[in-house]
Length: 553
Image (cartoon, rainbow, N blue to C red; front, side, top):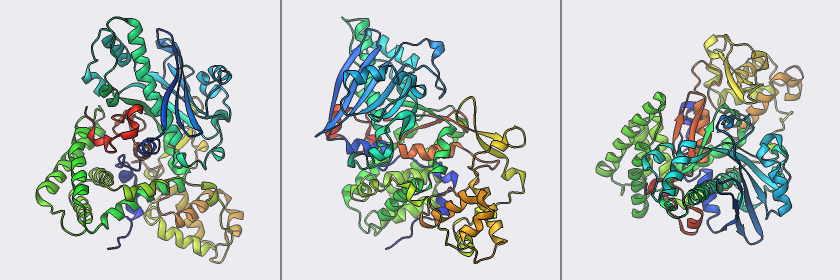
């Protein structure tokens, strides 16, 4: 059997992309797998009795060392904000390349807490900051100081002690440029160093809460139970700032989706599935019910999706437990076709993620293909003809070319950068000012405009001739030649239409990061938790790869 990859015109629709879930390909999971045999150490822990001070954590292998430097600061409650433009945080972090000297720590202590206003060096690789969930942190300290473990219901509802507001890398604010480190084997995967920072920050939060509790009551205090630690992650508030990324990095987006689609194709092409692989798959589906039922949100939109997902996963579980024969040939292909027939988009993509769990030999080689050297594809082939470009648009943007952009509902929104918040925002073109400052994120509208121009241009005109009079369309000409080679590089939807759900764009990216549960606070921002249920650093050398589904709490 030789199956086709799934059709980009279906998969690259936002409702489908917004139904993706974490998988073995997700960055935080591949990070843990890559660094499982590195030596973890807490090198410095110089905090006062209130938990303020400096700590350093490291991963080391042979001569390579990555060190997380943490600065825990005292701030007033009124100064605590999760906005990107905030100026003070409970803690600030940087991932340092190598072992930091005393001079490095002194230098960084004056700069890292300032975040964007500070200045880092090529020795620093990533930068972040985080705030406490004050209510949870205080409850945990109070409980531990009295010799008892904290309330699990409260912890499970929130899921973290700290939440980050941004993680920066690749040359921002003086950090090392990507070219300096991109050839290192251990970070040959998107956002791997950002994942390392978040993972080590998680451990710092446990050490800090234990330290504060112990200093509050030396005689009675106990440490946070390791199983409770594992059940906690690092929170994150994510808004529209993440959405433009997937539009502005088409080849990277393609590689993420392509690897996922290739994994699915290869799994569907397995003629006979081994008993142990079948059992692992079924076990993960069964155990995943707990993840769905413990998913907390107040969003009506998300609650509806969770209810539908739970109903459909239970239906699927009943199907594979009681009605399906795994000894048939190509069982996963039959399962996939059943899912398409019988369930919703959310359930289809949820089970697609779980299908990868038993198949290391398929997934592991794909992880190495998820990065992209995007500059290689930036140049426009100026010798290609108008006729060739038009054919590419007709083949690759079929649905987009059918959109009527003369109707107000199809160009109702526009993207802009907020001067005050320094973040991407979405506004109503007909009710709010500022559309003259629109960002070039309306790809569907601009592709349609390009197509209409091509229809009025001679077939044998080359791109250099065409662009002399149409330089405003250069960005979509480039994208069209990219999508010719990279089928999953383009969202096949209208990002300025009345019915746009921007949260789908956020969920897509966060699923590849490895976020487990999404808690939308509107259609434009949401909260997530990362590394919830993940092994602790001292467990990495021998951890359960299916920890996402096998968490004890």
